[in-house]
Image (tube, rainbow, N blue to C red; front, side, top):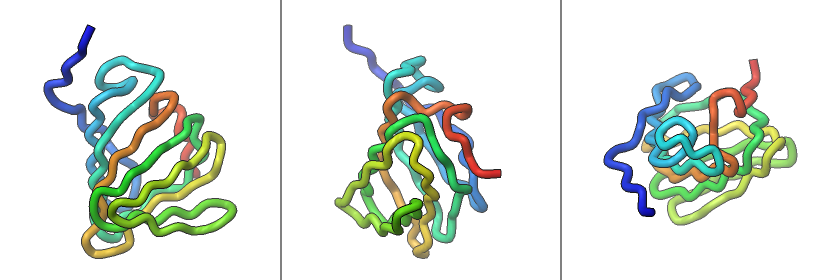
Length: 120
């Protein structure tokens, strides 16, 4: 049976500035624990604490630039590019450019606040 989502749930994001997370499917909005799909809007200069999540995170940048730091390197992901961060890999996301970043995030299994494991 088809499931229509009339509107996303806004999830409070961690970081030094307000980032908007609009979850369409996932544990928070639709009760789906297998996958979460969200649109992220992070302002220029936003940075969140590092994390070591229990999920694979597939990210596609729609506009702007998303910066990632991992234990093995740093990446700038621009409009039309994508990146996969595997579960249990330390990562820190930021949007250092003035325009910020808009991107789609797919997490498998679904994101939950308890499965992110952010740095203190």
